[in-house]
Image (cartoon, rainbow, N blue to C red):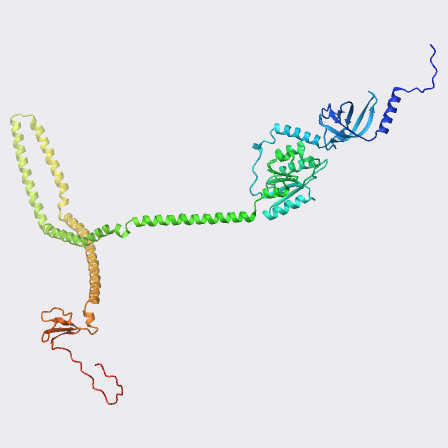
Length: 537
């Protein structure tokens, strides 16, 4: 068969594929494609990401190279409608075209809200938003860590509000509060503050504030990232979230220990008002002092009531004091009586214990003992002889027993004889005298003391009697008038003219008679006296 003649050029498959590739890349070097992500299974082992963008009637393969994937501010998620920015190219091996994506952004606020709700449900299911995880804020933190932009108005508002309420030590960790690196920098700041060692060169904060100003959902999206939420939930330091205005809500508001509507409100929640705290402490101190005074006053009243119910100390010891005085008054008399009795007994015994009398009594007792011994020996001898004549076997035993008895009595007499000697009796008398001598000294000292006390009491009584006696009044020029019977005359009506009275002066008494009404003589007036006033005497 003859081939038809043609002037068309021939191309290989590779040439066609490369031509198509160049055409597509030149024509669609930069495009923005809107579609729903499908078939996304995460990054490949190589680090690249592969998925499909589709709509109702078409689909296009998409690839994100490893280097670009790390730079994406918004990571792809299955089923999310996005706007992908990149360039079209072909894959010659399978004759397919695809888009190489440089950036991904959600397709409008609706898509972001849908993603936000989905992420919220996921994190809530894990328990990161549970109320039991939230910790109470320290009442008065010494160091406060602030995670925010160092150049915005937020940090100035926080520092100004803290200075007004309660000046504190503030550490600022500067971060970007929006953009691609916002989430990573906030996570590093939270982990960095938690990594500080307590008591180190850089003080570890007691409280953290994550803050930024208001903005759109896209501006605040960095605080909705899952990594930021997990860092807030896992922080060992209590965190106050103050992102946006009061109407703005981010996911870290649910994970933080407290959500503040504004950064200024976060500063107010972090510390109390110093002036109010001082006033509160002063009020507590005043109440404590008043309470202490009331307690002391109540205790004082109870003590006074208890003291009023107790007897006086003098009444408690009055009976014992009276008994002591009675015993003291009887002591000298008893001692005197005891010494006198001992002295009488001694004098009676002394006359019976003279050496001559004792020697005579000793001789007399020895003579009686000798006679008794002779009579006993004679009687014993008769008894033994009688027993021998009658051949009584008890005679030998009786003789032995009597001999032993006589020997024992002789030994007792020999032992008692030294005690009855004149020398022994003299020693006994000296011992008795040594016992009586201190008693006699104590008796003399007691009698002297008693006499001195009685003399002092008598002298004091005499002085008191002299001060109260009417004679001391007489010494000042007065006189005492007594009638004839010696009764004291106290008024004029008790006397009549002609009555005899005795007038007692300080130096003695004289007898007098009542003559009648007294007559006052006038003193003659001298010639040189010009005074017209007459004398009363």
